[in-house]
Image (tube, rainbow, N blue to C red; front, side):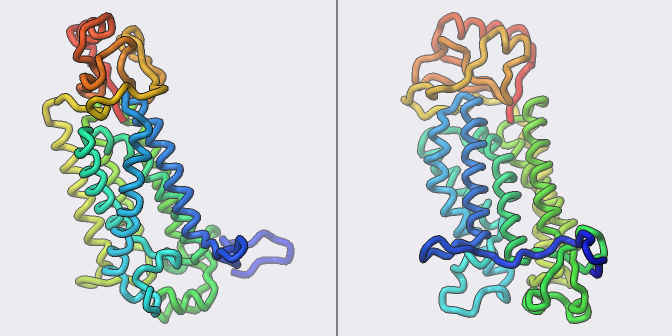
Length: 352
């Protein structure tokens, strides 16, 4: 789009590079974005899991399993759904540094591996899924910055002032229809997704703090909310993709997961509340965990998104949570206060 001399460009310019060198290493911004995103997701989940009364170091253990699983699952999904974008080299199916991780495949395999690991450790999966749901969105948002540097994940032509400039050689290789190759600016769908991911993450945190959300509830809303946005995004995107019945394959996946996520949320919200375990059986209470006093619980002001066990609570291995509140199996002042709270029927519980 033309603009006057000295005036600000009326579009988002594409970066001139997509990597930089540190000695012999070629560091791609796409890979760097995912590394930063994963790091932030771990930090966010540690804080949220500790607020539930769990050991934050458990998050590091789970990450060692789910991060590789997520990369493998994401690449498998990408290779299946966009085979035309696989680099034409022998290692092309593995070349994640050039771009190409399908988020749904990554989340699916990572969730399966994470659930297996948590069950092996004796931890109930649902509360952990709620703790990690907003963190996943933060990681996805940061990862989308890598799409900007790779000049990918864009939509159709646009004259909007935030249109993304795509150099001609990337238009040729990006799957753009021939009739649109003469346009220079396109919908920055990666940016739309980045904004949506952060907004949805903030909403899930807020909802977990202000509403009585059961285990798996926030994760179900993550699946539904992210997939619902992808319906809109897939309607805009023009990059290469497998098609079915004239629509992008990811459109069908997005619709199916939006419905599945909403149904899942309704089901878990209607289930009776059950005890759940947030500490590994036999392990000491999480070091440095923030605990709310019985008075704070009764007043409904824990100062945290979720609250943990009251001081002086259970013996190690007897600590469980009901409806988002960690309660103790042993007797004592804290256990008596928790029992009085339940008897009073305050219903003042929050989880997220």
